[in-house]
Image (cartoon, rainbow, N blue to C red):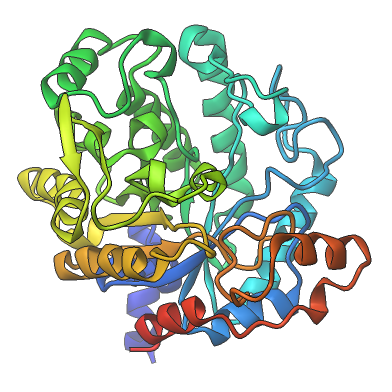
Amino acid sequence: MLAKFRPALLCLALACTPASAADLMTFWDSPQKGGNSFNAGEPDAAYFEALAATGASWVRLTFSKWKGEGRDFLIGNADHYEGLPAKDLERLKKALDAAHAAGLKVVVTPLSLPGARWKQQNGGKFDDRLWSDPAFAGQAVKFWGDLAGALKDHPAVAAYNLLNEPAPEKTTGLTENAAMADIQAWQQKNAGGTRDLPQLYARMIEAIRAVDPVTPVMVDGGYYANPRALAAWPKRLADDKVLYAFHMYEPYDATSAPNMKRETPLSYPGITTDYAGGRTTWDRKAVAQHIDTAFDWAKAQGLPPTRVVAAEFGCMRLWADCGTYLTDVMDAVEEKGGHWAFYSFREDEWEGMDYELSAKVKPGQFYWLKDQGKADTLPRNGKLMDLLKARMQK
């Protein structure tokens, strides 16, 4: 009988972690495919069940659009963080419960942090305070320590994504797709200062690990999660449970909403844009080269490709070339062996990248039915979602 209890006694002596928690990183040891949930209201059970039915294994969930107890959901007020509002936290946990019941893993992702309120909730102005005032870094670190302490035992949580699309470079004069030498020089110049993103991440991770030693952390590269900004980091973070994320919308001039307002929208492949200090014509090869900068950096740091995540990618659903573009992005990520999550699944405020909607559903129809409370009557037979499903269900 005593032999049966020896493993338990050993664990008590060594402060072992429960197996379910210790295995969290193994979820990411093989390529995972999922979607983004950026809704204005909490997704319900039916929403997560529908996403799971596509073949998705994970969802990148933001709560920052939800209406909370204070101005900023779960933060209270990004002007001065004091603690997690209890009712907001319970609502987030309820959504996590629903995702777990549907069999989905969740990456918890704030759009705002103290001193870095999301532009769309900040009067259309970029909030640079986190990157210029050291007091806000301390508040952001405290926020993540508090949130990790509250969520560490939730079975749905597969990672904490510390901040969506950080851009400490934005107000400094560096252009987003500057020459790599310029991006590296900017990183070196700002090392150790308030705009040093890896340093801020290291502080946040230290606070998380003080309460949660096992849950993986996902970090976006700088300049809105540009893979080239990530590739300018001189080294990986010290923590060994970190996933490195980038977003893929290049060439943005073609994939984004403004392109649809042109009399003749820009086409892909073939569009030429300013890039890396010169000009690039975008095609399948150029897309892969842009994406490869993240994977090549990870390899140079001794990281496997499964530590790299294309955490967002997409294009306007009514763009004639969207299917070709999505295919080229997925091919590039999958050929490298990384993870991906398309943007986005059934966004309740915006139809632009809702791939379930067919081309016959025009924006006006979406918004009219939404205003009438009849959004659930929209036909969801879009060919682009069939394309994504085929990849997720492999």
